[in-house]
Image (cartoon, rainbow, N blue to C red):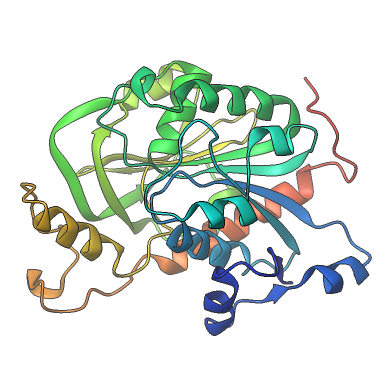
Amino acid sequence: MPIKIHDNLPARKLLQNEIVDVIDSSSAEKQDIRPLRFLLLNLMPKKLETEVQFARLLGASPLQIELTLMTTETYSPKNTKKEHLIEFYKTLDDVKNNFYDVLIITGAPVETVPFKEVKYWNELKKIILWSSKNVFRKIGVCWGAQALLKILYKIEKHTMDKKLFGVYDHNLNQEKRYRLMQGFIDRFPMPVSRYTENKKNEIKQAGLEILAFSPSSGVGMVRCPKTKDLFILNHLEYDAITLKDEFLRDKSQNTIIDIPANYFPNDDVNLEPINRWRPYAFLLFTNFINEVYQDVPFNFTKISN
């Protein structure tokens, strides 16, 4: 089934070029089904790139997905034209009376900043508080996951000595079988790009489950057993060249940065990296969507306690 996005969204053409099924509004209205409604709070500086990355994964589902894009009102990104935000993005005031099946909170380039000093931190807390009543399930990615863990469970992020950067193998939790991880092999790769981490013992003390862990990069994926909210501390959604772009950006700014680990063939920056993690990104999101579809009420209007 296709994903429904704004008819004029520039990402539409890029998705269609990738043979991602996209449906227009008029066609969607003719289908006698209830689509799953996803709200993407896009905090990344490159909005278009992130739109494509997540819409690609959602569009692979056999269920119809309706994607709404969301941004913060208290902070306007410098890398995105204001006209694009006005035409295609919503704020909390725009959606506060709506109900959504899933809220996705992306990463953001603010992880070295203390939470309370992030310009939109208070607004983000309001969004997450609102989502506790108006959203059935949540996904946090990288800093978005850390923000959710902080606000919902008071779990702190911890600064590391240097940036954890590269593609690292993660071990699947073998203590319990999860429908969400069905089809995953015992060890799978995930791109990592962060200066901070969340401690394994603090996550367990909060009653959360660790789904994937790497001896090299630490906790990779966490879940709340009660709400089934998902916290992905790394970047399965990344394109093959995203880490390369980040590496070249940092080098151009004279930032001290290592070559991404386990990424460039033979550690040669002149060779194109290979995307080894995409099958697991598709699998994870397909499994997640399937779980939501089975769990969410058809007429979802409130969270039951």
